[in-house]
Image 1 (tube, rainbow, N blue to C red):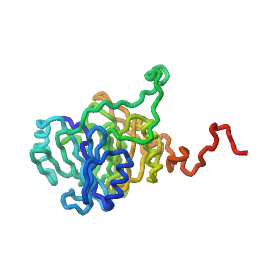
Image 2 (cartoon, rainbow, N blue to C red):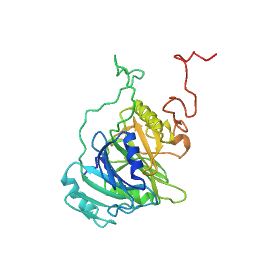
Image 3 (cartoon, rainbow, N blue to C red):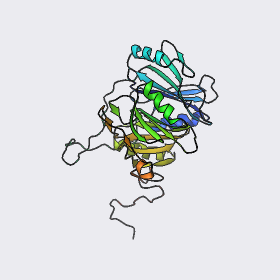
Image 4 (cartoon, rainbow, N blue to C red):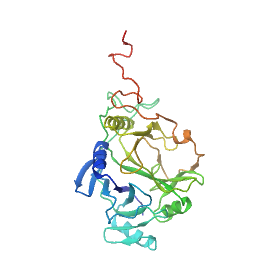
Length: 320
């Protein structure tokens, strides 16, 4: 039994119309909405459900304010879903029906597992020409005016029960630990062969639990920049980025999300196999980000926030 990845994330929000505008700017396709909820899709059919926080059908929130209420994970076939019906029995909030099985994890986040509805798509990022390996010939790299996320790539939670939560995802859902901050954090991937992490659990000194961010995969580093510049032009606020993570090698750009906590564009993460051995890292600013732009880039000037845009046609042109 192997989890394939995230099928859907469900937010409980306090300002539905602002969130609808944000996710449209983010590059999602709105496929349905009414007075209390809206549903968006990525290119491969991952969905984001944004619902009024007072909706009684939502799972119980694990923190105050707008936040994530549920993560839905996908499996390939109904037979794999049947395996989980037995494994998850006895967990808090357990339920099972013909379509799905679910419960709460040890920190109180609702999880749901169902047979995948994600689509196969023919989408490729631009290859890089690195020393000794030429992959792009007679083909310029793209410039993106905005991002269209391919999928929901990973979620990151603050936890007050790191060991229990890591064991839950490993023992019951089959996740593998990719890397660790010993006694502080665990990067976990759904399957032995896959991207560096689908889930990151981080224990804070004050014991707070909650959502840190949800990350959306885009095609390549150029789409990280193009998407971030577009979101900046739309008036949304950068938290940090663009930048690069040493632990996963991914390029990132984080924004504040009106649906809760932070949201990330990322690309070019490491891909791991069963031969990979988890590493231990000492937490620190340069471990989180090898480099990063504080405050982001301005989408109009295309320079660091609050910097003046160039006025001439060439960098050498200056006003006299």
